[in-house]
Image 1 (tube, rainbow, N blue to C red):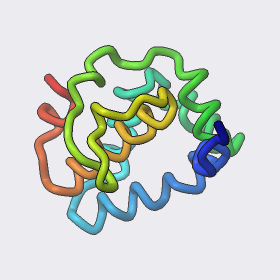
Image 2: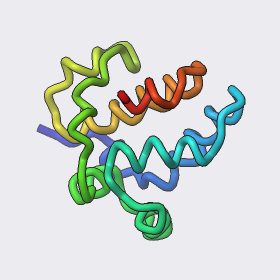
Image 3: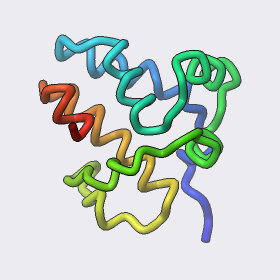
Length: 116
């Protein structure tokens, strides 16, 4: 099976788009960072290093320090596909992140986004 093009895209190339989407809706870069750190277990410093290294999505998620076990509670549709129905592990992680950013942009409270 061929890999999706997004796997080789750097997280740093999409990161500003996540921030812009959040900021257009009155949310902040700090909230985007909090979501990414919650999902992946990267510290603030480790996240900055990954952005500087231009780490691709596949490596970013494969080498994440601690994928949050509560991420399996993320449900819903992203790009017309139910997140919970995605079978490819890396694609599922990417879509989890997309869904969390969507929830942030829609004004959902951080406690709810982070499944507290």
